[in-house]
Length: 228
Image (cartoon, rainbow, N blue to C red; front, side, top):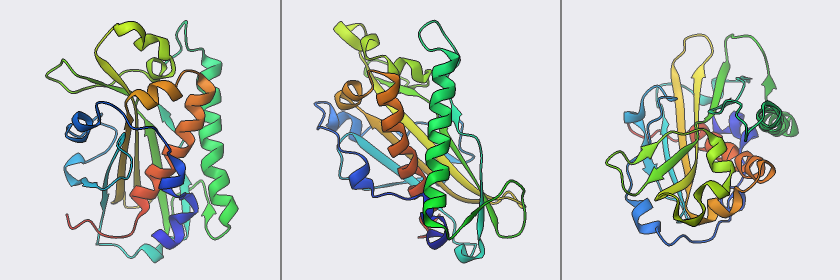
């Protein structure tokens, strides 16, 4: 599917340029987060990342010819965030619209795959979720899936208020639009002080999310089977 779905791809190395984080060794050994967005986390395997603050997992089936897909349905992006006094509905809608437009732009810029609205033969469905998460150093449960507004507000983590690490968790899945067969999954986490620094406003959050969303799609669309 890489030839057809690479319309959504960007260079991962160019997409994320984050500073090294002091707690990188702990992050590197942390368990994979499971928000419930993906259908089967047991299929995912870790892959290498050049960034200490970034971890990647992926799955790709070997049962389907990737060249059979000529079109995609892009589901509305999922954001784990409701309106609050700190995060308005306008900000949420702005983030959704910007991220959705970014994916559509990536498809249209290549021109070799069609965006459609209805299932059919040779049509894949792509779903992306930013579940919003924070990693806790002091909890037996390593991941707490919290609204992304906490990650957008760097002040929430200031002054040692808690021992939690701000994080961005982006998950993606590709299925056959007719049979619902799972074709691929991708999961990317960006954690640490670098994310805290880069996520202090809605605009900077959206800018970073655009890059990580595309990288997550690249991970799930990679046609190389994972052997599971």
